[in-house]
Length: 145
Image 1 (cartoon, rainbow, N blue to C red):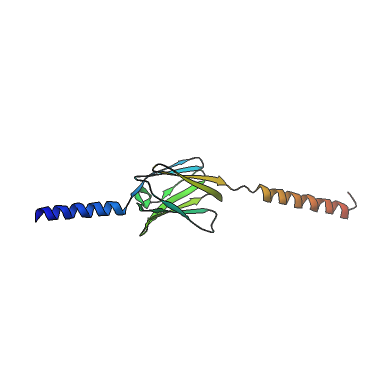
Image 2 (image 1 turned 45 degrees about the horizontal axis):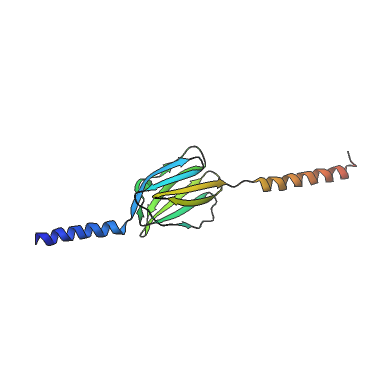
């Protein structure tokens, strides 16, 4: 009878650990890169969002770990990061100080998120051209003065 209970306990522990591949152990911000250390390798997918200041990543079979509490950054591109548990794992939400495109890669048990701030140079160039044309038109209307 005792052996059955012990076997049952080990079976339950084994089953529970196989359901969760791991959890988030640490988060390190390095310039425009964010390194998310997991206890075990986990699959991920990006959740589409219309907000250019937000990135959502679903980690499959991973608990939020240290990200159950929000981490705030007072400098740099990343404003805050947090994670919420889901039935399939966790959803990491990263808020940015400015719009940015991102690339994600894995290095072993580390998820590396690289951000590339979107520049407004094309908009600035268009605005500069509009101002230049407006000034030319004003000079022509005023007789070239």
